[in-house]
Structure formats: structure tokens, C-alpha cells
Amino acid sequence: MQPAILMKYALDLYSSFNPHTQTLDSYLSTVLGDCDSPTAPPSNVTLKQILYSVVRFKPGITSFLKHYFYDNAGSVLRADYDMYSIMLCLSLFRIQDIGFAQFSTFCLVQEPTKMASFLGYLFDTSPTSPVQCSVKQEWCKHYDVTYIEKELIAKIKSLEGPMQGLISKLVSKAQGMVAAQEEKEKKAGITTLKKTKGTVPVPFNITKPRPRRVPEPMRINNDVKVGAEPDYLDRTSLEEIEAEKAARLDDVRMQTRKKYEESKEQPFKFHETRSNIDQVRREIEEQREAELQFDASHRKPLP
Image (cartoon, rainbow, N blue to C red):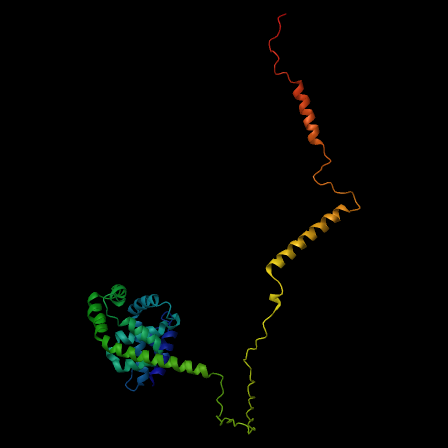
């Protein structure tokens, strides 16, 4: 039987087994049939051994998975609890019976990302690893310290090297599966069409235009022509100009005065005013000064 099918049968058997309703022997004899005779199918014997081991080492498996699910709560699913139980039993308690090569085939048929994370957590031998600290303390509740140190921890340390190689294969497989899935998603819904030869553009046979004739440049004459010297400057002098200016100003002054003197309206009285306020002010001041008696005696006569 192929490893993938065998692991699927083992997972179904363990998931459907209820120890409160029937014993393990009666359950296996009902489901599998012959498992103990020399002529029993090898697959039935293997399934019986796997199920017996998981039930036998259930306290240690439960203690380990409690810490594994707690430390990796964001990357593991509770629905894979039975699968992790079977893989832990095979990797830690029965690997010497089935051999490392057969165990590798069981791991490779599972999802590589899950197996790589699980094996990396289990076979971490650093002093601060969960197996060396919290899981080991939890195992001490069910097993003897000597058994844990010489059997479980020693087995983990001895298998660390081969397990690291298996983890590398699982990581490589996971990366290849991710790349294939991305490529499949890119091509999803896209129909592959037969490639045909594309149209090759050919230029039209158009008559080429004749080049335009450039007209000759216009000749510009740069000669400077100078006329005869003006003779109006010699017609007058500065004295004559000043005399004409003075005569013109006198004429304008006389015309302005004559215009105001011959006006039909009331003639202007230059330098005169109709107001007599100054004269009235002088008369009042003279009258007040006459009433003043600065030479009078201030002594009052006796009564």
C-alpha cells in the first residue's frame, strides 16, 4: 500500500476510534479484520501497530502537542491534531521499528510546510528549546526522568542531523509547490491560443515630394544719405529771441489788465476791503483806555 493511502487509513481509524464504547482489539478486528495471523496483510499489521502506539503513548503525545499548539497558535490548525499525534508517535516512539527511510516517505506525503514546522520544533536540541524546557517538564508528570533523558532526549539528539536534511527537502518541496500554485493561478481562466504569424507592416509606395526652392535673399542697401545742412539757425540770434520773449510777456500783461478794467460787472477794488472791523476794534480800545485811571489813589477817605 502506498504511504499516502496508508497514512490516510491510519488517520481515519484513529479519528473514528472511541475508547469509551469498545476496546482497541475489538475495534480493529471489526474494521480491519485479520491483523495477527501469519497470513494477515502487511498493511493491516502496520495500521494496528500505528494505532496501538498512539493509544499507548497518548499521555506523552498530548503533553507535547499542548505546548506545540500553544507556541504555534498562528500557524497550525486544530483539525490536524490527529495527524500530528500519529507523526509524533512515528518520529519519537516507533522510528527505530520502521526505519528513517520509511519515516521520510510518510513525511513527504504530508503537506511540506506543516511537516517542516513540526520536525523543526521537535528536533531542536538547543538548551532553550521547548523540548528541553517546558515539554520535558510536562513529560516528567507521566514518565521517569531516566527514561526521558536516555530514551526520548537522547533519541532526539541522535536524529537531529538526519532530520535537518529531511526538513531541507520539505522546505524545498514547499517552495516548489508554492511556485507551481502561483503559476497555476496566473494561468487560471486563460485559454491558450495557437500562435500565428503577425502582420508585417509594409510602407506605402508614395511619391516623394520635391524639395522646395529657397528664394534668393533680398538685397538691403546700407548706404547712409545725408541732406544739406539746415540754414534756419542763421536766420535769428539769441538777443532777438530774448527781445521777442519780453515783448510777448508785456503784451500778455497789458491784455490781462485791460480785460479786468473794462469789465461790465462791478469793478475790482484791488488792495481794498469792505470790512471795518479793524477800525471798530481801535475805537473800542481807545474808549477803554480813556476810562482807566492809573494815577488815582487807592486810599479811602476816613469817615
